Image (tube, rainbow, N blue to C red):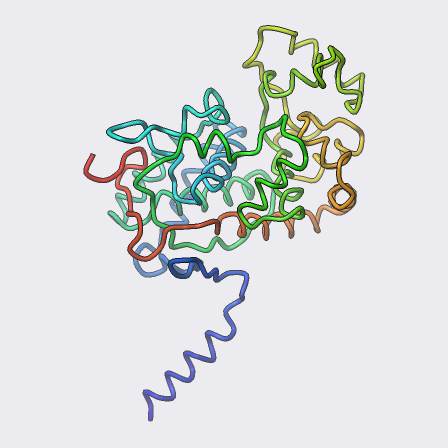
Amino acid sequence: MARFMSFLLALSLLAFVPLSLSHKTNGGYLYPQFYDHSCPKAQQIVKSVMAKAVAREVRMAASIMRLHFHDCFVKGCDASILLDSSGGIISEKNSVPNRNSARGFEVIDDIKSAVEKECPHTVSCSDILAIAARDSSVLTGGPSWEVPLGRRDSRGASLSGSNNNIPAPNNTFQTILTKFKLHGLNVVDLVALSGSHTIGNSRCTSFRQRLYNQSGNGRPDYSLDQSYAAQLRARCPRSGGDQNLFFLDFVSPTKFDNSYFKNILASKGLLSSDQLLFTKNQASMDLVKQYAANNKIFFEQFAQSMIKMANISPLTGSRGEIRKNCRRVNGH
């Protein structure tokens, strides 16, 4: 009888697990308490290493968030982006979206080695990346959320997936939305997740086309505020200076807030893909206005969309592995 009562109690407790925190995947569930017994200090360790990295260089928060995004859009959130080329693996680090711009790998290495010391062969690189992305938001003043955990790491990478699946700054609105929809994300997720451009930098090469030759007719993009465009041209010439960096949100570049959306309303979104959110689609335009007017609503939706994105095709159960070194599959 006692055993039956405890079974009933367990069932009733399960009924109160918030749905947003427990995510069914093809191979099982992801849930925030995954490491509570096997590695209770895991999240604390990730946060501590991330805090030091962001204190050294605030931009690192944006870089880690971008790594997580570029990981999830290729084969799911499986840490494939962290693999170096070796054996039969061709690294995603050399794809067009990642080459000369994906960064933060050493920070993930530092976190992994600290976590390995505490709990060897327990916490996956893909979970570390998901936690570190959340901490990147928190450390720059953005929202927090409970990260569902239990992902495992891939044993391979996909260079072609990285080249084809990650939205590009010069893609059309429809192409970008299609790339999101392929992963079960909708227009709300697209606009909210674009809000991560409230921190971080972009290279001249990513928006030069807007300044000089938007449609192949030798004319600039007139949806860009012209005084802002003139400032950008000063450090982003027609040729050369490809790697020159510019703040994605020039108003508060190191603070996670909704000024990104206010900039778009003022025609001062840096990338073509930023400004398109306001010029090419009614639903997207309404969301930009809503987030520009209400930081709280933006934060709530950003957290929900990050949880949803981090749930793209994770490897769970016996699929994949727990890499000892995030750069290499085990046994290499």
